[in-house]
Amino acid sequence: TPLNASPKTAYKTVPNVIGLSLASAQTRLRDDSLRVESIGSASQPVADQWPRAGLSVPSGSEVALATDGSKLSSEATVPNLRGMNMTQALSVLAASGLRLQANGFGVAVSQSAAPGTLRALGSEISVQFTTPATKR
Image (cartoon, rainbow, N blue to C red):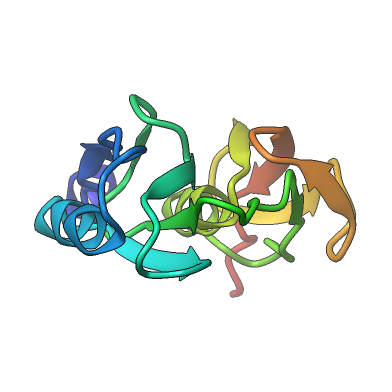
């Protein structure tokens, strides 16, 4: 069946790396198949991270780290999800620091927050999915 043919998304639980050296935190996250973006001095310990420890994210998602004296933004820019399937939308939102609330099946046709707008990290974006009409 087509549902069985769709790729399975592997999820990872984000580890707590606050307090670790930046190098140790980067190694730990990469060992968990997560990508790393960091701001601040490499000689300072990690003071903040997003997504927070314990959250489940798709494998390959990005984790943002800030060392002492630096702060991560508390807002995320809403991406344009139109035309994406549910797996793609989930992955893009997770990488942006946002959560998906899916309605329907197929491809994204509308979303509750306009692309380019700012939302608080962790906000839920409602996305309407519709199966494309078949052409004859």
